[in-house]
Length: 205
Image 1 (cartoon, rainbow, N blue to C red):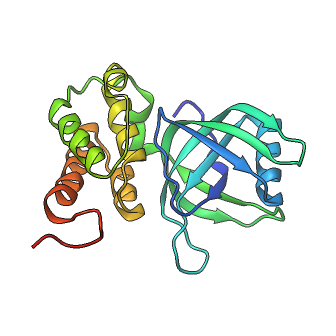
Image 2 (tube, helix red, strand yellow; image 1 turned 90 degrees about the horizontal axis):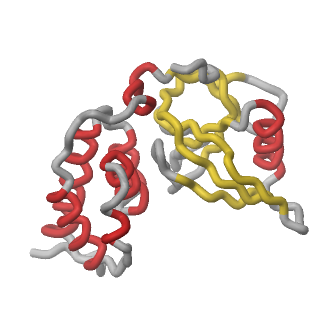
């Protein structure tokens, strides 16, 4: 897998999921994550993001490796970075260390397609049509004309990242292996919201 490290620093964060070929801006202010970012910058600019679970200190097993491609330090000590998703990973085990942040042993084998040019053709027109209705119903605006010009894998990953669905549903999409299955899963989730639920948190009878 292009020699990506099998032990990586990981930022667990509830409610934040990102995908390969998407960008995630982060505002870092906790000391443990300031240490993480500074150590990553001094090494290879790589760090992982994974969604934390609600109970104890546990995290989901699938996350995304990213590269820091923008770095700004504010006067009050905060660090602003932009993280670009590279490939998903599966957590094998946590490495015990003496650092403030957590490190995990990971494996990338299940997600080899994240690193190659996508050749699988997806009929994304149905998904985009559904997404337009879904976003409009939830009051979200998107420049669809420009959005539809990007590559299909980036379209699907970005929709999965920004759609107003639950963290568990986004995690389900993140863990889906192929692009086609990812699109089907996302479309199925949107179908549920469009046909079963309104946006006042009331079920439509």
